Length: 388
Image 1 (cartoon, one colour):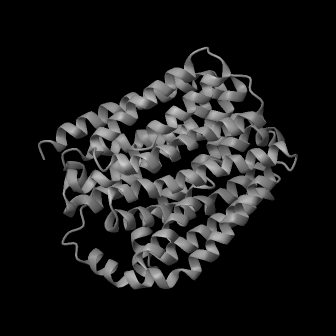
Image 2 (cartoon, rainbow, N blue to C red; image 1 turned 30 degrees about the vertical axis):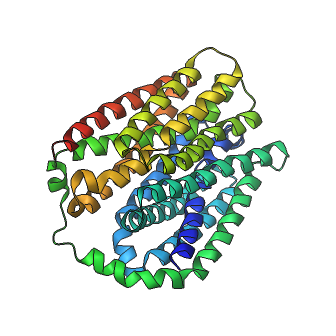
């Protein structure tokens, strides 16, 4: 039964990734039809992120009330409805409206599943499960690219993904008996906590601010790259929107392949070493992207950035109990997720303003600054961990 439940969780992680790269890959074709500036993608991204933050903060209460299985199924159903809503939107305000359930659904399922996997599975399972997210995030832009090149248009791309989400929702509801068998044990574990740490107490823990900042930077990097890579290739590199949609998906291909490999690397390497390796690979990818070189180097750069991102998220979550102690890990993981969503909320829209008022060509430099701050924070965290 535990293996069957793991397969269901894998499908859930795929469903998490499917919509994540759609807006970035479709936006170059979308914004002219809505007669809005290119920077308005940041508005939609911000609404989604706010919804995600709100629902993730409520995920503990919802999971205690409904169980992880029902929270996951309901959240995926909300995302499916939002994606269908995107496909029938004819005005920009409609996109903003549908972005609300989009974000609310994403936050609950993300927090619930990450917490569940952190409690019940090993580091390699965490990497492989996030690899499943990468599969979804890679498939999404390919479906959108096919919709654009076939003449079906971006609305059909969103609609096809919504159909996949509906199918996944059905599977999740049919799997609810598997989750119920674990619900009692999970609730007993959650209720055994002696003390719920306040934000003030969490901030006072050595290394907490460093890991929060690092997580903020990582998710800012990942979401900015996913949202704006396609627009950068179109507006600065002169690549067609149809081709750019496929190119941008290579970033998620890199994450997917990297997390599959990372699952094996965790068997012989520490989380800290793999995070450092990832940062170095990101730096090489950014150099390839920024150099005035042929088109192929942009592809290689995006793949390398994705490969570098691969170990950082799962290794950070998995290493939290070892770094801060098992009694503090739940509280720290909570603020890590919150910091991640704040990074998603703030940084991609900020680059949208930069692209609109200065130049989209600043995209690689923007990512370089985020990566540098992230590396500094992880270095401080590793130093702190060695003395905790």
